[in-house]
Every structure is written in C-alpha cells, then in structure tokens.
Length: 298
Picture 1 (cartoon, one colour):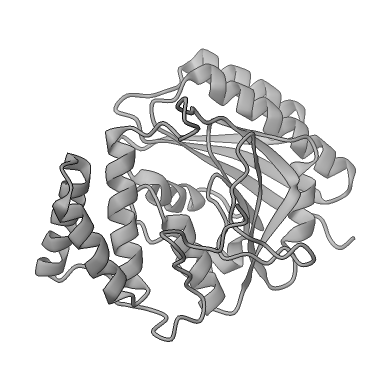
Picture 2 (spheres, rainbow, N blue to C red):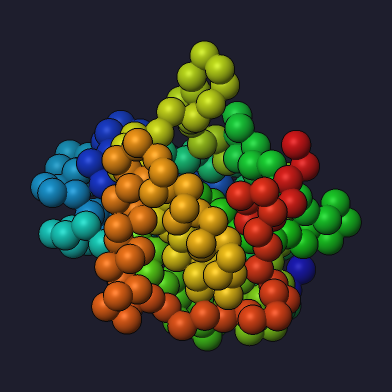
C-alpha cells in the first residue's frame, strides 16, 4: 500500500452560506477517518481561505468545524485574506500555510463521499500530478480513459495534487486566470512538465448545481464574464491565435455586456503587453474541441 501521506484539504470561501461550509467540513472529516483506517493518511488539515468582503465564518461556525475535524485527528487553518484573490490566487496563498505531502482542492459547497479521499490518494501516486473526482449530480462530460483514468484536465472543484508537482509548476497561474480555466491551465502545465492527469470516477463528490427548465446551468453575469475572459486567455496562452480571433469576433458582435467586457479586457492586456507568454506551440497537451478543453463523452 505504501507509506501513509499527509493531506491538506483547501477550500476558498467567498460569501458562502456557513451551513454549507460546516456540512462540507463534516464530510471531509468522515472521509479522512476512513482514509486513516486504511493506513493511507498520516496527518491532515482543513485549510479555509476567506476572500469575502467580510469574514464568512464567525467563532461559533469555526468551533463547529474544529470539533468535527479535530475529532478525526485533523487541524483547522483559517485565514481571512481581506481581499478577493480568486480561485487560484486563494489556493496559492493558502498552500503557503502548510507543508503536507498532498493538497486537495475542494469547493466549499462540495460534499466529499465517505471513501473519496482514500480513492484519490491511491490514484495520485508515482508520476500522477493531479487526479479529480466524479461530480454528482451533474457528472462532467470530459472524456477519460476507462482503464488508466487519463484525462485532458482535472477540475478544481475536487482534485488532489502532489505538493512537489504543485511547486514544480509554481501552482496556479492566478495572474492570468481569476476564476475559471486555472484548473485546465494547471493540468496542462503539469503535462508539459512530464506529469500525468487522471480522473477517478469512483471518488464521488456532491457538487450542487442550479439548472434552468431547459437543463442549462444557471450562471450569474460575473460567472459569464470570467468564463468568457478565461477562455480567451487560455486560447492565447496555448498558442491558438485563430481561436482567439474567432472568439473576439463573436464577442464583439454580441449584445451581452459580459462578453463585450471580456473582449475589452483581452484588448487591454494585449495592448499593455501583460498577456502570458504562449506555451505548447505544437499542441502536445492542449485540447480545444468545439469550445471545450477535452473531448466530451456526451
């Protein structure tokens, strides 16, 4: 089975509902208990980084979280940043607070399955840089090899990475990606560095999503904007100028303010010379398929 390893479970908060954070912490503690019983987990911590305009958790909330975590041999790290660092920026800052072997990036509204931490720990061995779990009730449609778990990228909603791999590629590119595509970029840079990226479908995580009557995900204007912006930056960073041009033309013809603003921000960064240097010119690891970053199963 190998030597037991230490894990830090990291969640970035931004004005989330405290009850949901407590519920997620209880599920993490239970999953950690089972991983320890299997001899996989040596020590662990739950690290919460708060990007909210005011603290999301008060002392009574933190007391409940500590009770659940400490009952299963873990510790709690809580940092109020006092600024919105975004998803990758928050995780980068939080990773500096601990020295565990592994880092589990987990959305604060994601509820980890009982055996999911153990399954992810088994999967992230040898030269595997990062492995993600299966999201329920809406499973991500990105393709993966049913035998090896190999996949294009691992979702930051629930993914376990080896710290040495995280440090080898300098973590998330938070200067380019504020909210979306930082996990795609992280996965692709790991591949360029020689690591593999895996999906473990048996490691379940409940990640609630709101749907419209047509089955579409409900997205706020901010989510639309940051997703659109990230798509432009990702295409630029992975040497796809034709895709950048096509997206910009589409956005500039749109009447939706979020898309027009995303195009304007790309133009601003391009004019200022602060776009990232392009990578993967021969397209060895990056995938752009019908507007997605992997082949989709459905």
